[in-house]
Length: 112
Image (cartoon, rainbow, N blue to C red; front, side, top):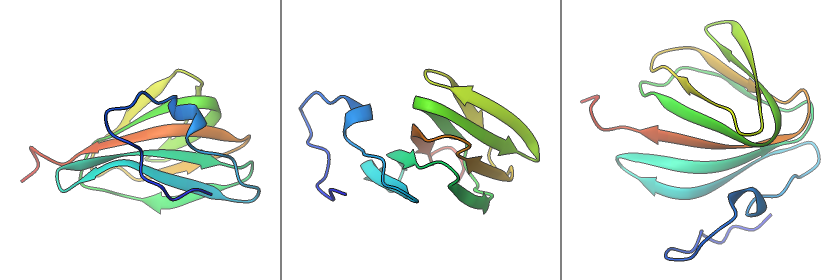
């Protein structure tokens, strides 16, 4: 797992900047600011993020594979190229029934 920051001013193929690691969820920060962040995340099969509720909308796009995202207990299956907005203050769980990669974007402004 590489911890080097994503280089600014250079083109990237996002699906290639993060690798799958057996039995793991790998998170790589692309941009992290006080006003929001963008991360690339890879999930090995059977892995999940614990249930959480955050006070901001979260845009999630699947860039490889297929993910299960539960929002307020309702399951949605997203495949490569599909995206969803997880509404602020909604409980959500991201699960890997098969391995996948995603981009997560949170914009914090407008919620002061």
